[in-house]
Image 1 (cartoon, helix red, strand yellow):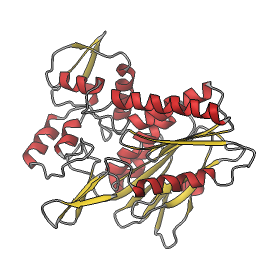
Image 2 (cartoon, helix red, strand yellow):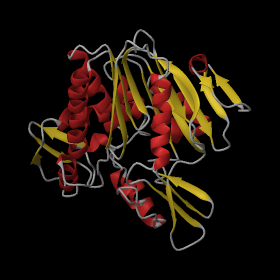
Image 3 (cartoon, helix red, strand yellow):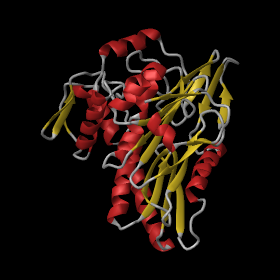
Length: 366
């Protein structure tokens, strides 16, 4: 990871516009869990790319190399298309929608493929009680987190207050046939907390239709499993929020998905305080007091999407409210690591995880 000092010894920023050596190391570490012990007779194909602003890994087991390469290339091409379509600030379908929202109540024809995505994101936002809120793109931009190389900044508190009071919500978006508009000009969509999971579900569905019996897809720590690797479950690592490598590992069964939200991926520090990219819609400020939240989602048609979305409300809710927030999203297996490094986890998650580090402080909840 590349750290740069900007203007003050008190001001530190993490910039990750491209895969850094540490990012590659962590990704490789996860895949070592996944591939270790594969039966020699089971061919395993692995391909990496950089999409959605993060490292992406596609691992396919049990297919001949040429076919696995073809399948993997199709998955990565679909990811690239989704990335361009759902990008919040670069030219694309979503950024064009955001331009229309700013001119509300103007009505414009919608790109059909976006309708079910936005409707699903709205449903999940309502499930979370608004803690997952893709409509707060203006707040994310205000904090400088919309950019491959962001400029850290301390926004004017008056601007933050004004955006919070404007209360942009997903339910402000209205579809009328082929037209759309927003009832609230403060709405600006940022699907960064949804798109990776949605992509996992599409990829898993595609690979299953192609008869693939074993695959593991990892988009920046959001991972979904298909089948097994030569009859053995896939084994994956959960990234340590403060160290290289994994804090724990687990077997990921067919159809299960796991996702982590952390304060270590995109953040800056000012006067010794860390400000991450996960914004609390209630306050307009980056969520505090949590290093990481991991959720394990059971097999289902939206497991990948939930693995991406469900960790955000729990992260924002913090130590006092994370369990309720995770349950509301259907995540019975969940873990939170607080700012001191203490581990809070559900009984269901505790049964699945094998921790790599000794001396951790644990708090188990039902």
